[in-house]
Picture 1 (tube, rainbow over the protein chains, first blue to last red):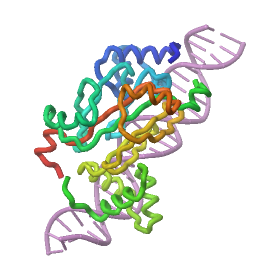
Picture 2 (picture 1 turned 90 degrees about the vertical axis):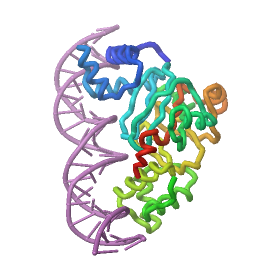
Picture 3 (picture 1 turned 120 degrees about the vertical axis):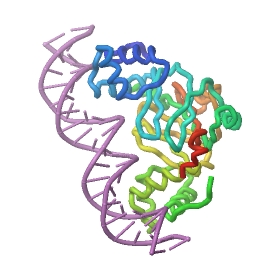
Length: 130
Length: 130
DNA sequence: GTTATTGCAAACAATTTGCACCCAC
DNA sequence: GTGGGTGCAAATTGTTTGCAATAAC
């Protein structure tokens, strides 16, 4: 995790820090415009990709296909409705056996969960691509 | 989880059962054609959506944006490289404190992980949409 | 026969890319 | 001055939708 960021990357990190929820690239683009620190949409995507490659931010993808970004430091997960697509935030980092509890406390009928790890594979670590 | 499936849904379930890995909608479309049980691409997407709504299958989304589907019964997770995008399958259902171990055993530098639960929210349960 | 399902092709939307311009160092 | 960073607009790609034809019960 290097500590060298471009202007756009810094702007984005700043916005993400000021938010307490994840945000889509499109909304981020709009938010930056609101803050009078506009960036091109392409730049936003490129910066997000770079930050993700540095392990600075993480992304989750909605069923709609759009991705939401937040700082890696954030530790929130979500209950995603396979029907309406809405997602409900839950704090902490529960796991499998926890599903039953969720059914009760959130009145959410859990079908399955997804656990994914993100980082750099051996090859990409050594080749130290950017 | 009702047990009433359309023809296309049955075909898809059959294919998914015969595979030991998840598959994209596009590849599923091709696979069905290979097996002389072709379906329209739109039908494939619609059937997948319906099956997901029934909790029969689950989906994960690659960084490329395309979604991979598999039976809910499958219990595999993946190591996703934020750099090259490749994903490596891991069996079992590890969690956070496990990351360190992954670094060793898979030579994978974990930046973060994502845990999401999928199912039906209270509202959608009562309204029993489809 | 009536209703739900399917296939095709056109429409969409998020994301990516080519290229010229500009800034940082 | 030079190389990476940025913006714009066009191109791409997975996915969705309208609608007429078809299958299911």
